[in-house]
Image 1: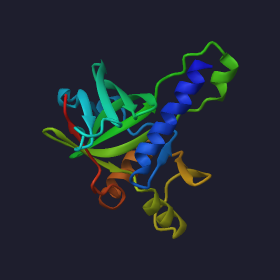
Image 2: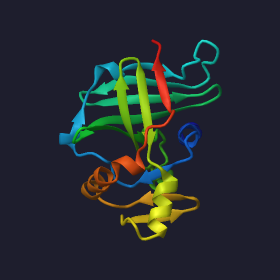
Image 3: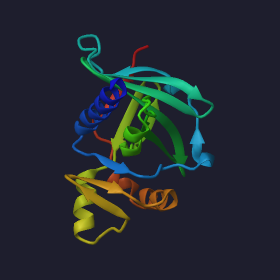
Image 4: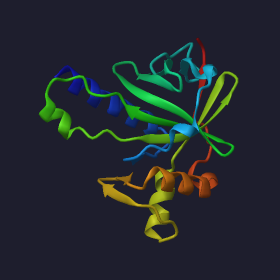
Length: 192
């Protein structure tokens, strides 16, 4: 029961964080192959909004998890969620792929019903500023409906779940990088 609450809370925290840009695209498959992964020690630490002196209610805490992976704890004033995060490089672009940590429950039946998904965003690490460009859900919906882009997907409620393979995802992302992953005002600042 504890895992279920932690897992649900983690997904809700991620939805809230991603919701600040109005987009939330999920993927069944990761955006990376092992060869694409990189590790940037400058990412390890605690990140928050620029006005962190007044409000520490939302933090992104990156910890080294493996040679090329991180544990990401996204914490708001009431809840937290834990994710396995992978930093990857596609061409000249950097991305962060997030995946909820594995369930810690002894109920095999329950575990068979939990289907975590990947989400990814384009990032730019500039000293003590982490700029985030979330996958633009509105752009994706509009272009799928207009038959302007093609990628394997399913619709679930108000979101799109990509079912394309990793190879197809990479090709799609690189082809539409400028339209689908625009840097706006979403940024975090490192403060310890």
